[in-house]
Image (cartoon, rainbow, N blue to C red; front, side, top):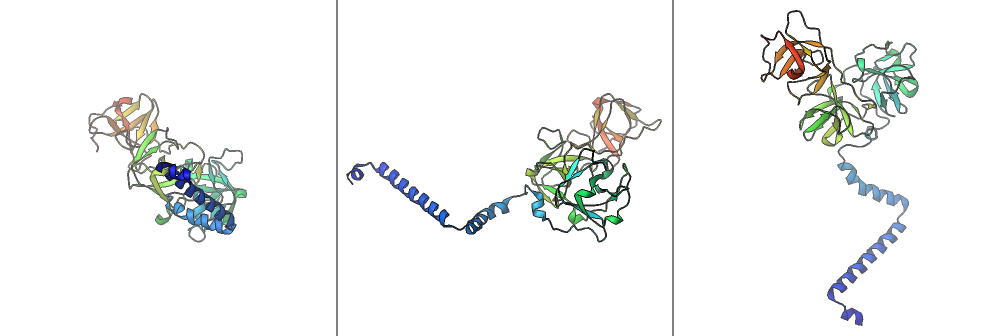
Length: 331
């Protein structure tokens, strides 16, 4: 007691605080030892409930979907569900390298079958022809007997997805769209705050969505999950290869029409500026018919099948233009 009386006030305060914390720590140890395993799990679940509810996007998309969910296809539509992670290939050949993955529990419409019906064709819009192939051994199929036989290289139209079931993302801030699922990949566009885009796939690490570019629906870009909110995207496939720009062709210029020739490989963009998405490439030496020019004279509009309006834009600095006296200015 003599020590306590002689001790400075600050020392007394420190000792009281240390004693109090020691008692609390001891009480927590005793409480943990006395709680039954089931009660501890319930307590942990209650504590974690608020955290889980605040997550904007789950890191495991299929967990929210539920393994027994029934797809919203019209009755009689052929469809399948992956029994395990099912490789999606460009051709119905087990030797072909997987280009995407349908995860266990994910489902997809069936749009065709191989002649021996050992492979199912499913819609994968960023593949050439719009379809990929999964082995029948890796999936459980429903109504597969009605799927038509499809030859390799054919294009098959899938039944349109109802609007309320379409996989979409909505930007919660202005966010860059890139050519690949990497912050170092080239920026090819911007998704404005509040703007939506259709989702066609996702990266293996679940950090990126592959989207259809709003400015050019035939082209695919990548967007970070951190800046968007997704819906109906649980069953989009994992893309395991670097996506290629899906684009139409450049028609040959008609005789007597204004045309240009690429001096170097030059990007074809959705609009007259580098802020617009890249929708294709005009290779060095290739020619295209000119249909217009930008108001500043820095961009030529050419006939191009890869966009909805049938034209694309190339920078005038990288091409040689001819017969352009009467080319109209386009906005």
